[in-house]
Amino acid sequence: MKSEDFDYNLPKNLIASYPKDNRDQSRLLVLNKEKKSIDHKNFYNLTDYLVPGDLLILNNTKVIPAKLTGVRDGKEVELLLTNRINSSEWNMLISKPKYDSVISFQDGLTGKLAKDNQNEWVVAFNKDADEYIEHYGKMPLPPYIERESEERDKETYQTIYAKKDGAIAAPTAGLHFTRELMDDIRNQCVDIKFITLHVGVGTFRPVKTEKIEDHIMHQEYVEISEDTSRAVNFAKKSSRRVIAVGTTAVRALESAADEEGIINPYSDFTDLFIYPPYKYKIVDAIITNFHLPKSTLLMLVSAFCGRKFLFKSYNAAIEENYRFLSYGDSMFIY
Image (cartoon, rainbow, N blue to C red; front, side):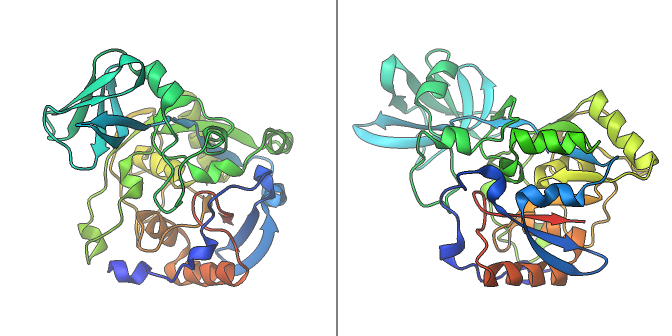
């Protein structure tokens, strides 16, 4: 298939710059794959579509404030930390990197640029940088949110169940959950389990190849515990639905599945690229936000519910002025 097959016109005014004040007040577009029906709801209505025995899988990765500003050669520069090597070394992205150049930060912190054995750029700080990053770093909002990150983004661009540091982008489908909603879901006898997928730089990289199968996915780290894998296998064996919250949960589960659809505990990197006509082994329903044109995330969702039906639903969302992308509204597809 061609990347052009996944293009659509996204009105710029529909790209959400800020989240809803109340997380679960966002809108929810509900798609039934078999009936090809489209319903307009709110996220708090999610409980109407869950049944006892469902298994909800959420990604508990935590976004680090990975954008740092320093001074190099008398000029202000900004870098994005992408992968923690140890407490003083990180892979990173920077405009116009210079080998052996030194960046000065506040509180006596400096960083020297080099390359690792994968030919990726590394910043080596002169001391443990974790506390500095937490205090001075800014949240790495996606580039389509055309504003500087603010202090409140440290709370709003983070799921309420975020636990494990390591992501440079939020698993945004999870941003709609409140503690009250999660309590309501558990009270419906719906099981909730967690995986970890640290969202990396690949989430910002568009598909630039003409044929989508020529696109190379950036690796992201995944952890699935024995407890979660056992719950997934029990659900599949019992014909109960496995509902993935976000494309990150989808990729984690499908990456860990063997050919017979069995999940084993997993602790490794994945570069799984899901696009039509991929056959899902584990996931029975997906909660997801609306995605950029030609993005790998849009292709993943297309593989789940069909490209034509997905674009029909996107057109319906655009007509109803849904809010798009990371801070936008969401979909439930079953």
